[in-house]
Length: 373
Image 1: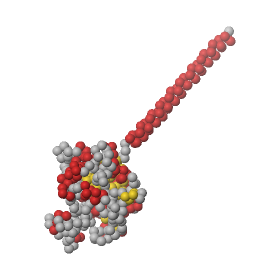
Image 2 (image 1 turned 90 degrees about the vertical axis):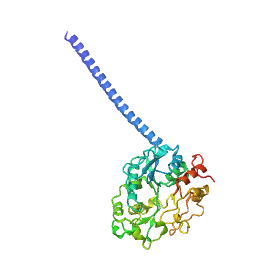
Image 3 (image 1 turned 60 degrees about the vertical axis):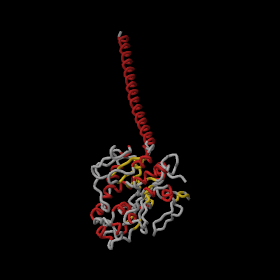
Image 4 (image 1 turned 30 degrees about the vertical axis):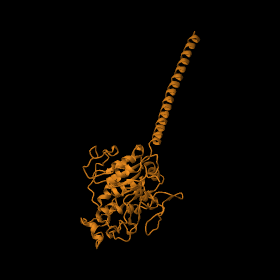
């Protein structure tokens, strides 16, 4: 009898053990399923993120420095058309100015003004402060990899695809930079923060990599020196009639926009990471011109009568360009073949730029370079 009672007890114990094993298996299966789902989810998210990185291309940030509106907006509109995923636009105009349907005809420029702009005076540190403001805004977009400074009188002379490929093909910044030992713009009071051997000069219209753009924005040493020591007296209205004052240093000091980026990169030890030339063409050698408006401290302004295909071809023409340290002129070549020294040109009036837009088919992305030979 006792043996018979013992048997059902053993059976019940065995059943309970099986149930516990089954429950443990079910719990293990659920936990394994959760781990698998979590792993797969992370993988799916990673793949989606990777796919997004491949679909969103690196962009060029175009940083426009303007007085008010952009007079050549429709020329740039034609240049940007169809390339929306490969560029971004930032505009620095006077404080309070808005780019809306009343001030621009291009949708690419609508509301693209920065909201913390300052009043800019030529020849003062406010110009480089405006550049830093533009860079700070542009760096907020992680896909901006190149940063191109553009004036409101500048036009592109190649189509967007050619321009994009050219700028992105090199890991360097394009910065016209050379040691300035002749004009006396260096203020000895800058030493030792900026020693004279780091003093550089060049064109304001630079193209920066993201790394160098961050260097400019994060600078807390060189910029304050320019603010403190680079001040100028106002130029007289008859300046163009008297282009060479007896003492130029009394009329201007430093000209920060021609020295700041160049000096900063030299100071930080990045000169080995730059291509020493500007991609923006300006015509300065007009001292012998009979037209007084084409002489002085500013480059020539191209008018309607100047705007011909031949002008653009001459700006792009590089067959007779060479380089030497004294004259700062450079052969431009790529893999032994001629390549453009310039991708942009200034200064163009609105009638001149619009005339080029109508008379020369240089914005069709299927054509390659803007002006066909």
